[in-house]
Image 1 (cartoon, rainbow, N blue to C red):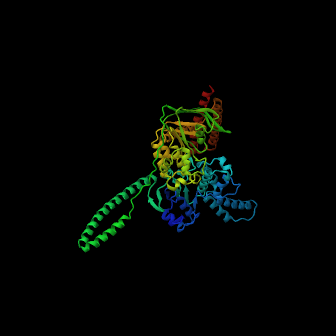
Image 2: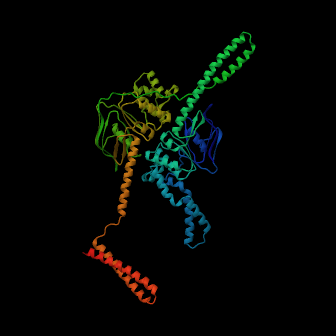
Length: 619
């Protein structure tokens, strides 16, 4: 069954420039599809067309009958008094409405009034079908998984940041059991823990998922098919992101082989056509027609364009020779905000050339730690001592420029003091070409701002590079570009990132910030995950052992044992007395007497054993 049918969608925002140019594809029920394409290819535009937020110029989108589609970027407007908890509860409005009707009927029952028993049974069945008894549990489970803590749930929704609102909206869509999830960069505002939770949820989700994402790890884990938007049309790949990369390269190589074979054929035909024309001039009229026909064929073949790869940016970091083992050291570092302890007694040392990933859940203080390291914030206690030859550069998460009214070119000139030609060459390497260099900085997207800041940083002779979420606003091609540039950078690198591809590729040491401390692990990301899994397993074993120990009956004192035995002796004596009474009653019944004598014999033996145990304890 088809859940989404996109049929010939055309959309333009400028005259004669279609961002979507007759794109068509289908998504079947239960599929998890990744929608790829470079920035500006029209991915978000297509999402808005699918949910009806935007009208297409041509074509149509058909959703499965009765299916509901939810788009994360569409955040509804809520009353100003709504808390985050109120917003989450809107996912279960239908359940709460049924519960209210049931309560009204229950009140009629209690008051002895007439009530509709059939209606109550119907409401009860519907309430149970919708999971009414579990809504509180489900709300807590999803909120915890997506890192929406109790204090955020109590805050007014209007006071949340854009990223927090997106996270809450994602939780609401999940709780609504939406049939079709349209996820536009769902991991952008999630930490590693929440991202892994979402991946696990989506792999078990029985509905349909269409997602835009630049998180390659996420795409590999979640999607089973890829649709790429190229020049406004769809190209299809029947696998995850890794399959897409390999298949795209294979298709390029095949197209290139066909093109080169065709070019060789054109050269051969041109030679033949020339010979035919020579013969035609010598009076062989029939060869002229054949030459003309051959030239038309050559012209048709020339219309095939050479397959192209997107031109990669060519840039590399400047480096400063570093002649010291110690880059910086941290001693007794403490930092708090009110009662919240961010860092408590942290001690670390870093040598030149190390590559360190700083990870941790949102709100643990990673950016605060970076700001102290870069001298932008002071610790409450302790100190950070930089090596005398250390020279750092910092790419912050939210890039800002002091003069956003300046053009890209002027910003480069002012901040680097280089020649105009050098600035144009450098900007060109970072994909600022043609009229792009004259755009004002305030008009740049988040990804373009990051690129411009990197362009400026890369000119400096640095030996300590600090990156705070360097890939957050970049498309996949730009992420791969910065990774290539970093491969050529051999000095110290410290970065905060939730991009697990990036972490796996560069981290040789992991710092995990949690509960005011930093776990320092010397090894790569995959090794660290394996280490954590072992630690968690050991902790689970300890908890299980402790639980079993607690379940074991505690040893009783001698006095308690004696008292317990005396009760058992009294009961045994009473039982023998009962048997004696029955022997008198059944004195004439031979068979019954035999049974009673056998029962009494066993009872007396048991009583004797109790006497012996009592005597041992009494001594």
